[in-house]
Image (cartoon, rainbow, N blue to C red; front, top):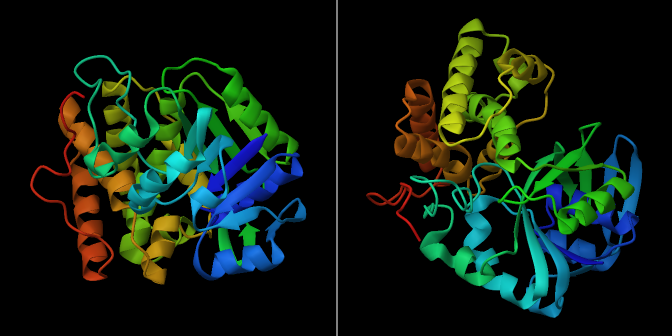
Length: 338
């Protein structure tokens, strides 16, 4: 199976090595010093279960990599317009594209019942570039749990002991293509899972990201340090309750065990990726992780006072660092039917 990982940073580099271990013919789209290191020496992953190495084909030009059986998009949301431009050269007649990313995905409203179905999220997919590049039927949803970081060009360190990737079709069908990708990941040494309710899994992760991620951006601390403060814990509970209400208004049903999420946060020394981006001066995923849930809340008529405040403060912090471009009027909203 020919698989291209589009965005071979911490998450993408880890998944590329796992897929190569499983016997897939792997290529990666990367850039800069990381790309140069991969081209020279391959990718190395230091994980709790061992150290692994692979030498995937690597380029910053997707056209050099040829048509694929599947593509895993693992970039941060601000890079999606560039992905939309590069994806077509990787696509054969039946190529599936799995978006394994944090936050609300650009395709979230596809297939939902009225009044949500057919809506678009222009801050995540400007001008419907991805929608036009892919056409119907190629998209797979994905959620990843694999706390990791690029510690040097070509070298990824994974902190999470039980890394998982959950894949699902937007329409809920259990298909052979998501099963094949999940099996490859499992064979490569992490848990590849499939679900008929991928939106539930998106929210299951997003609830923790919305609570811990917003406060991490505002404090510069990992969740373990944040959740020692009782008012911060209370704020996290309110954020999770508000986000659960949004999800349920849209037909999703995430797990409501917020105390378990907070307890897990108390164990996490790993800084959320959005805080890593702030500290490293990289564009921040404000839109997909923080703002898109609020756009959906407005569409569904759900009140989110705590989340409104924390997201607004995160936007101030991100703009002050020059890492977030404010939305034009109405640009951050959910747009009408396609």
